[in-house]
Amino acid sequence: MSPASSHGEHFAEVVVVRHGETSWNASRIIQGQMDPELNEIGRQQATMLARRLSKETKPASVYSSDLKRAAETAQTIATACDVSNLVFDQALRERHMGDLHGLKFDDAYRIKPEAYKAFSSGDRSEEIPGGGESLDQLSERCVSCLNAIAEKHKGKRVIVVSHGATIEEICRHADPTSSARRRIPNTSISMIHISGDNHHWILEKLGDVAHLKEDGFLQSAFGGDGASA
Image (cartoon, rainbow, N blue to C red; front, side):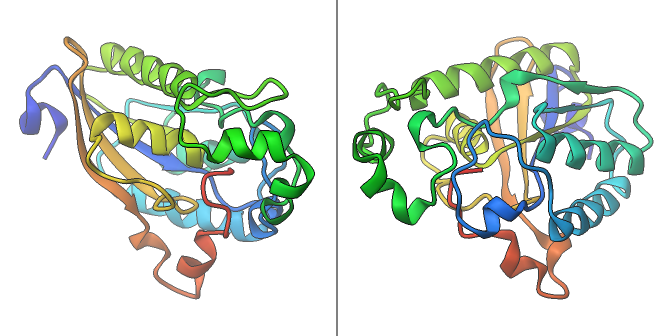
C-alpha cells in the first residue's frame, strides 16, 4: 500500500534506518559525531538491508547523515534501489556526545563523571559537557529535518539513514508512548508516515530487522552500544 493510499496524499512514507555495524559498536565505544567507518559485518548488514529495500516500493530519494558509517550504508541502499538522488545532511548526524566521545561505555562514568551524569540524568534539557547536545536539542534538529523532507515528498516514499540516539528521538516524537530505547539495532527499519501539511506523525514500524534473521547477523546487530552510535 502506498503512503498516498494509506494515510492520504499529503503523507510521506519515511523509512528510517540505522547504519551498519562499526568496530566501535562492537567494542561499546561511544561514537557520537566521531567518524569510524563500517566494519565487514556492517557492510554485509547494509547489503542485506539494501536487498530487502530494493524489493519494496522504490523511494523518491535517499537522505543520510554525512558521517561515514551512515553515508556508506546509504550509498549501498541507493545503488540497490537504483536511486540517483542521494542527499547528505548534517541534521541527521548522531547526538553530539561532548566529553564522552571515544570512551568505552563501561569506563565513561569513571573517566568523565560529570559528562556521564548529564548523559544519564534523564533531564532532556541538560547538555553534555564538552559541547554535547541535550536530548531536546537533538530532537529539534532531527524532527525539523524530517518535517522538511516530508514537505518535499508528499505522497512518496523516502529512505533516511541515521544513528541510534537520533532514531530513538525520531520514534519518540512519532509516538511518545512507545519506548525506542535500545530497540534500534544496526540496519533496523523504522517507518513513520509524516504529513507534509501539518507535520502529523504516525509511527508504523519500530526496529524491524527481519532481513538479518540468518547467519547470526541478528545477534550482532545490537552491537552492545545502546544509543551511542
